[in-house]
Image (cartoon, rainbow, N blue to C red; front, side):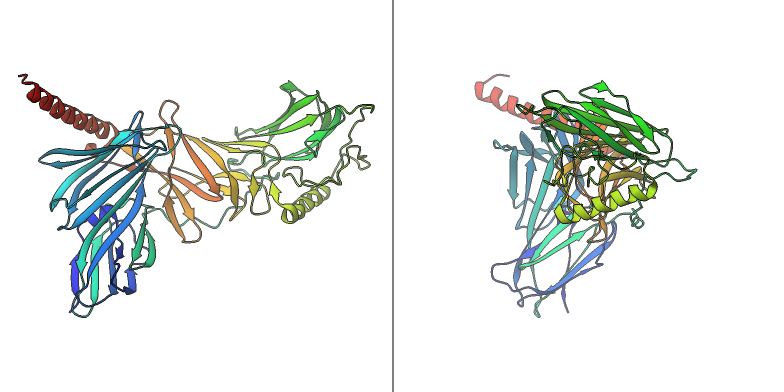
Length: 511
C-alpha cells in the first residue's frame, strides 16, 4: 500500500515543491501533464522508506490595485498540520501586510527596503480554514506589483518509500505557473483554463488587397530614404512606401512642419531641408478604419566646413530603410537613375534585399514606431533589435472566451527593448482582468503582469516576445469585487489601528 495523502487547499493556494537535504527523490510523475482549473492534480514519486520530506513551492500573483493600495484575497484557505510555513514577498511596494481571520483579524506586517521589496513570513500556523488578505501600499504606480507566495509543510513516505498527493486546482488562477523542486528535481506546471489554443499565427500582411471585412491592421510604412542618421548636407530627399488593405491618408512632417510630397502609386517622395543639429522626420499613415501607424526617425545635420550642400537623391538600391542596417557604403550623393514610378516587382526586390540584410547584419528598428489598432497602441523604441527577420506589426484577432486579443509579429521573435502595449478598457466592478500570453514552447496560456491606469482606463503591458496577447474578463463574487476588496482592507486597517489605540490608552490609563 502506498501512503496516500490529500493536500489541503493551503497547498493549492501556496503551491507545492518537495525537497530534502537527506532524501533522494526519484520517479516524479505529475498527472494530468496539462492540468486545467478544477482538475485534480496528482503527484507521485519515491524516496527512502518512512522518510520525512520537506515540501516547498512558489508562484506569483498580480494583485488588484486602487492607488495607493493593492490587495489580494484568498478565501477558505486550509492550513495543514504543523510544522508548516508560508512566506509572501512583495515587489514594488512600500509595505506588506498579511491578515488572517482567526475569529478576529490577525495581521503581520513589514516595511519594504529601498528597492521596494517587503517580506512577511510565519511558521506553525494553527491548523484550520481561514480567509487571508494580502495588502499594502504601492511604491510606483507606473509599474506592476508582484506577490511571490511560498509555502512548506512536511509529509512522510510509506514503508516502500512511495508517496502520493492529490488535490484540486479550482483555486489556482488560469495561466499561473507553479514552480516545483522535488528533491533537487525541478518541475514547473502551468494551470490552464477554458481559453482555447489559438490558431496558427495569422499572416500580418498590409499590402493592398480586396477585402470586404474590417481592416484590423495599421498601414505599413517602409522608408527607402533617407537611409542614414548623420548628414553633412542640408538638402535630403525622402522616398517612402505606404501599404494597406484599405484606403488611407498619409502626412509628412519635418520638425513639426507639414511637408509637401509627390505620389506615384504607393511611393511618396519629397525634399527635406535640415536645420543644423537634430531633426525629426515624422510620417503618419491612417486608414479609413482609424488604424494608424506613426514612424519617427531622427536625422542629425552638421555643417561641413568649406563644402557646398548637395542634394541627396533617393536610391532604389538603398537597403532596409524600415530597419537600420548600418552600411558604410551608403553615399550621401547617390543618384536616383531609376524611375520613381516603381512597380510591384521593384517593391518586392527592395523588401527582399531588406530581409537579406536584416539576417546578415541584424534587424534593428530605425526610428520610433507607434501603431494604433482599435483600442490598442503599440510603441516600438528607436534601436530595438529583433531576433528574427521582418517588421514588427500588430493585428487585432478574435478568440473564443476572450475580451480582446492581438497578435504581434514577426513569428517567434524576441526584442532586446520591451515594446509598450497600451490598451484602453474599462474594468467593471464585478469583473477582474487577466492578461494572458500564449507560450509556444509549452503550448499554454500564461498569466503576465500589467499596470492599470484607473484614471485613464488604460492597461500597459511590456512586450518582450512576439505572439498572441489576450485580455480575459472573469466574473467575481460580490465578496471579492474591487470595491469589497479595498473596503475590507480598509476595515482591517481600522481594526488594527483600534487595537493599537486601545493598547496605548491602557498603558496611559485612559478610559
